[in-house]
Image (cartoon, rainbow, N blue to C red; front, side, top):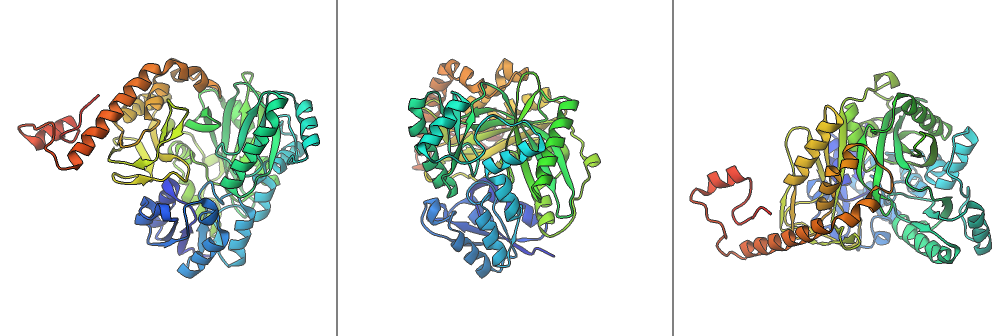
Length: 499
């Protein structure tokens, strides 16, 4: 079948990413927006845009009936869920199918089999793929919960059974923390994914977080596109990702890829998905979960393989075969992604909503900026804090690191706080450059960032004051004798100061 129009059931940079992929293939795009997103970039870019309700996700981006109704009213053939929200919701996929809409993602049965983390763990166990010790069913009864926790041992993780992105996760170090952690995880999961089910899993200290990208079509073909290193995290949300992993060698890559494809095949998986593993220092790996959707960090895989994952999603959803075989997949060079979030990393990663009064994104050879932000855009307080994904490619990892350091230095955001200062520090750190990574990397790094924190705050305050001064129409504080030439030479607007 031919897909002519796609409703993008999401917001932010991923909605922009899907809209661009549709446009390249001559497919019309339909955006949806809450009241808080009326002037968002994805709304401005789409061919059509429709309101879906108040800012809270439950009344807008999680409202299945509204999304399906808009899709039908707009004449869309298909719905792309992006990531987060309803991307791993089998009921949404079923509702799309019942309305005669193509769901650009796996079939509902595969979402239930793998999107539910406990069900996915059971599949891995059946296939003989090692899993992290924990429960294989959601926990709810208090007595059974405490008994399971004692058997697993502390510290342990309480994890949302549905969704991903680090939401609905809590580390529990003793039984006295268990009840409150469960309540918080359930509440967060219900708000983010519409399902508050959680399970328990042993907490592994400082492993590597390695994930494998898979693609599958409806004709039984399943391939993997190599791995991504996702070990640098805060609050179980990734900050920096790269492909390939500096730790994974050829034999381990083959073992991880084979296990990922077996899990996807066993569940009848179709479309793009990601199988996640924890890997220890001896290169032993443990199945963690499968994300039955496009991953935030899919771009680094695209950069090293040359395969457009969103294009493949749309092709597979239209009933076409995969355009590549496993033998066609070759990893070339190295790619790194830094997530630029609207957060204050020096004050507990608190969100930093507000208006962006100045923005200069990084550009240049082999630099990619996937963003939902623009100068004058107001970052709402209701959603995930991700502003942009800054990605670079290099002929080798050292080149990619140098390019990322340059790109982060170029990237300027005024009016809100962002994670850029910490990202720059991570990329410059000797352990990062040496590939000595683990999920505990950031915990070791943050205590050393006091000087960076103070400098970043001072620069942010000065830049915000200068931008407001200029916005109010006052004469600029820098008046070069030849404004055009000076601006071109310095690469900054008159009135901006370099730190």
